[in-house]
Image (tube, rainbow, N blue to C red; front, side, top):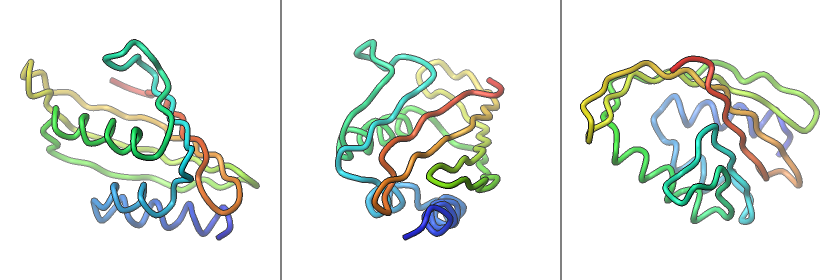
Length: 122
């Protein structure tokens, strides 16, 4: 698939709240995911599809999602970006907030090999 095809598929799946299907079908097995804040192990990076999916599952389990939207994609030659908006409550603390982040995705061989998130508002 081309960068545009993958980008449009990822956005379509996310709009249908099928984020895990997007990861299963569009991520390369050795994907690298980079977060703006360190995870529980102190690392900003997660390596490998199974670990990235588990990281996302842990995040979803720790938060109540009140609203979510996706903007984009914004497509380049081998990269694309997507803007995500979430209204969430962190279950453990009860803190509710709006999070706006940009996901930048790198492609190779028709699959996503890297995702990097930048928080625009939190």
